[in-house]
Amino acid sequence: MNTIKLTAEKITVETFKPYGQLITPSKDGKLYDEDDAQLNLQKGIPRFYIMRLDKKGRKFHAITRHSQCTQCLGSLEGKKWLMAVAPPCEGDIPEIDKIQAFEIPGNCFIKLEVGTWHAGPHFDHEIVDFYNLELSDTNEVDHYTYNFKQEQQLEFEIV
Picture 1 (tube, rainbow, N blue to C red):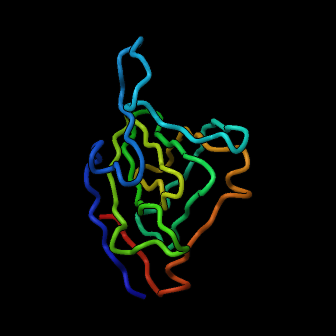
Picture 2: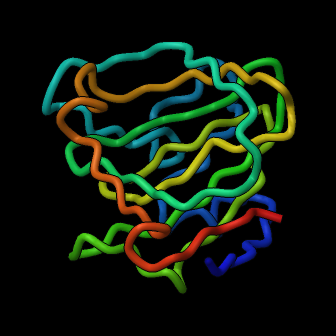
């Protein structure tokens, strides 16, 4: 099996734009604008919950997308984390050369655009709690995964 190393870059509003939005703190009372998360949750019941994840390392061989809603993820307790993403595409295979890894600080969250491929969250802590906003049935009816190991004998490692 071949391993492709992805260098995690520090996330910015501009570098993350092809995949979704980076949402950073704003002053209380600020009016809604394009810097706020532009959500698409109208195809079901929104689900906002805290997801506890155990450390699984920085390697992955599968990547997932949701085609019916946006998804928001952020860590609690200020812990930094990593996410690999690829932009939405027409077919059922993400474009390998467009997979990018990001380092995300613990004082913000990301909104994944509808159809954005994602692998993670990844982190170096033993356990991290994440808040997650998606639809109540996303993991049952809107969870398409492409397995690089099975289809192309590939895995990825975020460095």
